[in-house]
Picture (cartoon, rainbow, N blue to C red):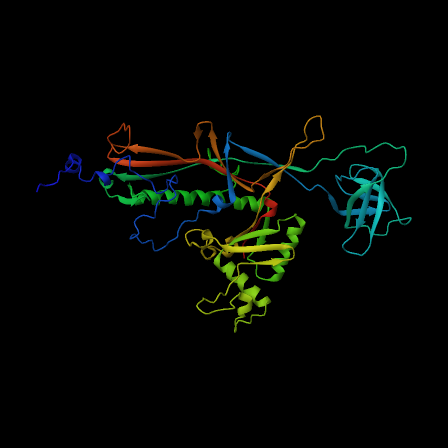
Length: 454
């Protein structure tokens, strides 16, 4: 009998399979391998989950930005309705109207019944003259009239339209901001590492605090893209510019609903607004817990739940054996629109935007988000009547500065002593610096709604 031979490597490097080196270092946020298991299961996170990220990744597209300003335009309505028009005899007044000679107009008022049709016979910058078709004089009233062009009519042998119309166009822009953070650890603490194993059994090491720092950076990044505002000219801050976050975009260009929805009348108000703006059929509500409970309560009340007995059929609890009683809803349909709602971590977390942490007037209860995409106008090909098909684009786009071979989407820089490859310092620290330069391009905000305030 003889003792088995041992390879030299096992003698001189007894832990070579789990030795912490640059080659087997793994950052948990390295998404190149999505199958890595959760590490250190015995480390209990009593506030789990704390992450408020995910909304922008779910709803937003990503796109490179090659300048300090992202510019886009949004078309207005194709058809213009002149509300608040006044009339004196056959002369109608509306400042800067878009009525043209020989237009056929429909005139009516919401204050009184009756509508009439006429033909425009003369126009000025702020007035137009029209004769009614079915009588000698107009009878629809003289104030608060609505005028809508429904077509036109010309006599035989007359010239065509005297001028063309263009659609309303609004120009918007947003500027990226530079955001930075870092992780730093003393060299003596570097050995305090955690090991994890890939599916093939290969060991990798990482530092738990580094992962926590990076997640905090991502949380703050999403928070800023939602809450940030541009810096006004009256501010004393110089050299800074801010950027328009999603909430600000909705408040300026979208719809604001005061308070949470608390009744069917509230839903009907939202439905009426969706009709006016050509809203999407399907809408998602990202809301806080109290808002969700309020919707559950008034929906159940509408369906006859009196608070004393549960209507199991309404809640889909037809067979409760072995099941938990479901006292909530996930969505509802009203008119031709469907609304599905779910909780949003950023509105639940007391360290984020939980409404209970704010004055009633400053509370945010949720957002209504259109499901789907909007479209860019298709261009007319030169010399033909062929048109390039409109291109569908996301309502939200996360834009970051980049060019060929260089991206500021997420720069990671290492600094410190011997732990860093090609180190130029003997500083006994290990640092990771993160940098991003980005902004959020939010288009079609007229279809979005923010629920806020008392």
